[in-house]
Length: 419
Image (cartoon, rainbow, N blue to C red; front, side):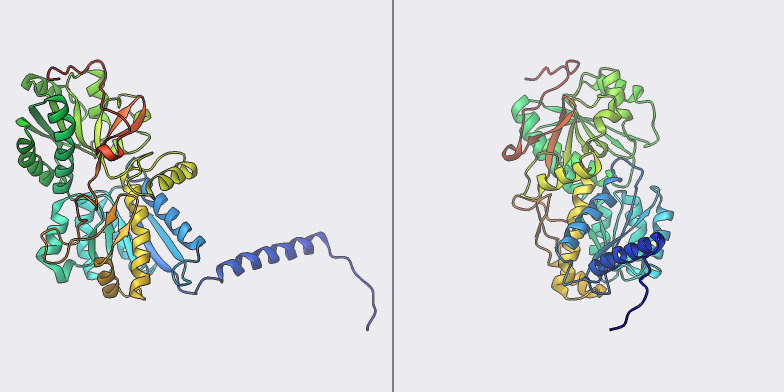
């Protein structure tokens, strides 16, 4: 045993030691994971109402997976990029994600034009790519038309055609059967996603008993809807069937300000976000909008816990693309586990056999021989979508009956002459 003078540690040395111990603890926690993480890029419209939920929800899913040990000991790592709602920025981000950041899969965009611009890059760079919110039928059509080239792309949201079916299914129950409505005007923004949506509307609305009196397509840059609403009022339809997303809140604000006496039902992307009431100065009350999930709606056992957890973390409920992005991280991770690999072709095969209960329903993809190749399967027991309505400043589910929380109701300026 040796003896000697004991020299007390200086304050700086103590701090350095504590820091080293803290880092050691953190590194110890990280080293519990295997060296090679499963990397998923999220390229999204972070500044847009509907897009902001995408990276937030994806990170939330990854955190939950990692808290349970990751996938076969591998951490799920989300690498995020803001595409500023630009196709060019999205392409640059996709290239960087694959070549520099070495991601294994990409989740990107609720804008159809962006997704269509990214599809060739998913093919060239052989990287599985899933959209959480784009709707254009052209996406699945392209996969079906040239499967070998486009097989890396998956459509993680309902196609425009399926959205039209979902809207018509709801309109039949809520408007035709319950309110005896017989006429409609279609009002859609001029965009890639609404072309097949409107074709679907024109086909299914007459079948459910709603005669289409007029079909108005407007530029997403439109700021004054006065002439459009005047024209619609002149046609005297029972309902306006909508296809609106990129135009934002303006149609809803002016519908209320101008006291347009006709209800609106259909697709309104911004209405899926819980900030829509505030964003429209509460012009939202009465708006009926299609969704794949919603606050307080138990589509599956996972729906409400996710929505409530998201609100607790971020201060608002997710948009429709938040639900899908959350599910996508989970079933990409599940595909990696089933494939036993992050190899792109093996991942594609595993994703094709996805059978995952997510927040929006039971998720399966159409096969290579079906017209909507790699699109989500639509129907009872799978995904049917919902119809929600803004009532007293909150989103309320009104269809289908098994998850409805309320009957539809309209503001006093809406004149229903048919019920």
